[in-house]
Length: 178
Image 1: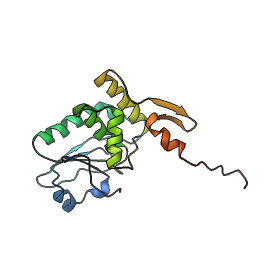
Image 2 (image 1 turned 90 degrees about the horizontal axis):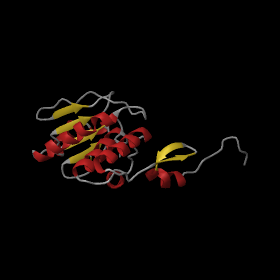
Image 3 (image 1 turned 45 degrees about the vertical axis):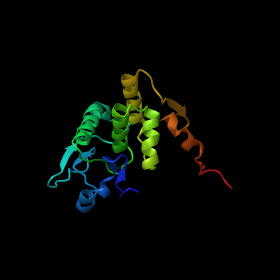
Image 4 (image 1 turned 120 degrees about the vertical axis):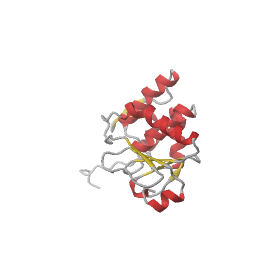
């Protein structure tokens, strides 16, 4: 899954850095890449444009300041008939966040619906809680309401869309004798 180019729409793809293989990108018709890493340099290929949004995958990183820019780039590529790949290191947090934001802004989907849609196409996504908080704030600005809330659990503060995953986790106490 980490090395797959996952199509979200006919023009929007998400992946981790392992999918950045020239033949694979050409075969998928990718014309633009949004690289949202600090760690990975932009792919240099003829007839392919790359935009780098340097941000770390930490809850305190300010990815939200790039939401509109990234969404607008995706929209422009789509309007020109191109295809865009949004990637980070693993295709789990940063790239997923930017794809979710695009769907919120231009497909008029709620944050909850955008998250569930992207997760249905790439099940391994899991934007970090800091990015989720920024998406909640963005949804409030876009729509005047929010569809996801942050909740407090023993593991910390997480978005309510992670509640079911948390409830299904098995916790092991290493000091307990069996």
